[in-house]
Length: 336
Picture (tube, rainbow, N blue to C red):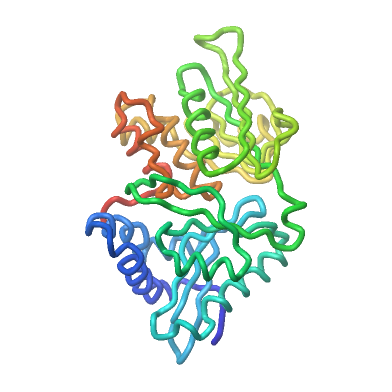
């Protein structure tokens, strides 16, 4: 058996395996649940994933065909496996073990410290198999988007437990943009996934027209310092030219042109995204800027919105439209 990184030409075969995986694992759920799950992993969607720098997709070849695959997301030295599957006729022959072993060695080489998965909580056979490979049970999510339970399992690799790192998110905006709701909702999501979470909100004296910023830190370990000196991710909605160091930047393109962006923020990586433009064109109001941004943040840091019933965390007013805005920011597909 040969393990290798997938390429766009593999996506048709992976799409077929993904359909078999969903039909098998979620056999007890409704046709609608399986349909929506499949909608997020069409052949075209998989081709997009192959090109994303945060995504990692491996396949196993045997007898000239792809018989197994693994797909996951990389963020801040943590690799989250979203899906792993092997054809029934090749089970018991070591394909999944080889696949996970290959991924672990590649991740170690890249300096990663932790691998985690979120498995269907009633899939005891897979959970027992994972335990033999060194995975431990983490938080049990009692209610996912579709209502069933999901079990977190994780494994530190190398000196991972000693090297467990804090992840830091800085959000800067103006009064009325929903920064407080965005940061509180994100903090709740991260806490429900078993993280230690720290959130500090800072307001200008001019409450109605000033700026507001949020320092959000999450970690496997106790957080010693709640203040962010350098962010892993900076979300910026405001026109302010204040400088703040960040490793990655997501900024509303409707607020700054390229010239002002270059002189206002120093970041090793910048991404322009029209939160305001999208909120107006797709949802008819600027009030959905924060929920679109929430979806985008969750995707960037590797939190699959299928894991939690986010609807329960959103304000009751306009909850369905807020949920649609989160899905849009995440690039979630409801329909095939």
